Amino acid sequence: MRPLCSFFIVVSLGLPVAARAAEPQGAELEYRVYVGGIAAARYFLRYTATDTRTEIALTAQTEGFTDWLLGWRSSQFAEAEVDPLSPSRARQVAFRTEGVFRGEVRRVELRSYADRPAEWQISPPEDPEPRTPILPEQTAGTFDPLTGTFLNLRKGTDVAGCPAEIPFFDGRRRFDAVFGQQRLDEVKPSSYTIFSGPTLVCQFTIKRIGGYVLRANDLNRPEDRDKPIFLHLGTVLPGLPRLPVRIESELTLGSVIAHLVAARPASGVTRMAALPAQ
Image (tube, rainbow, N blue to C red; front, side, top):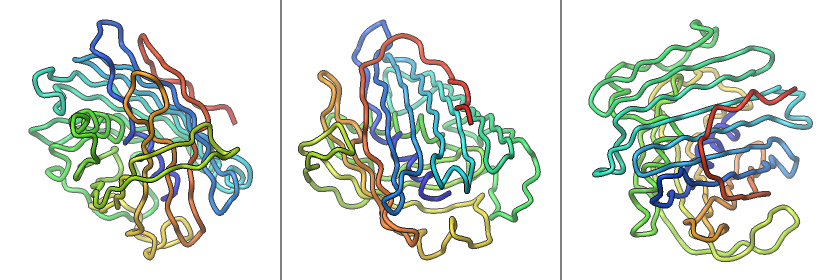
C-alpha cells in the first residue's frame, strides 16, 4: 500500500489557501494514479475553508488489476478550528476514515492536539499483523495528513516554497514528511493530464516512526522506504495558489505517477463523502 498511501499524503500537500471571505472557498480535484504504466487508482478531493475553519474530504479507490488484487476503497474527512492569529495552529482537529481493504472494513476516529497526545479509536481494534510500536507521547503535536498539510502549506504561502518537516499521525501510523530540495520544472502537454506549464517541485521522503507492519512484502519493501517522492505544484485555477498537478516516485514495482485530471473551484460546506461503490 505504500504507493497509494504516499499519494494520499502528497495530494494533501498541495491544498490551496482559501480566500478571506465568510463563505468557505476552496477547490475540487480529481487524480488518476498509474503504477508501472497501468492505471491503479482514482482520488477525489474537496476542500473549503475560511480564516478560522477548514473542512477537507477525500475519497479513493483502486481500479483494474490493482482493484482485483487489493480491493481498496476509502473515505476520509478532517475538520479543524484554526487560530486566525496563528494560521499554522489548530484549536481543535477531528479526523475520521472509513475504508475497505481486501474485504475487511476499517475505521479510524482521531482527535489531535498541539500540547498533548492524540486520542483515537480504530476498528477492528486488533491487527493480525505485528507492527512497530507507537508511544502515546509520540503523537503529541502531530497532525492528520489532511489538516497538517493544509495548515503547513498555508503557513508557507507567502514565501511560495516547500514545507520543511511535518509530523503526522493517522490513527494507525506515525510518520514525518521530511522535505529536501526544491526546484523549478515544467510539465509537458499530455493526454494524461489537464495541466501543462511551469511547476515548483518539492522533494520529500517518509520517515517512519511507528505503527508500520514488520513483515516485508511486495507492498512493503525495505528498499523502497527511503525513496524520494516528487510533488509538482502548478497554477491551475484563477485566484488560488498552486495545486498538485503531478506526483511521482520510482519503486521496485515500477514508476508511480499521479496526474491531475480535473479541477474546479468550490464553495460552501464540505462533508464526509460516502464510501465509493465497489
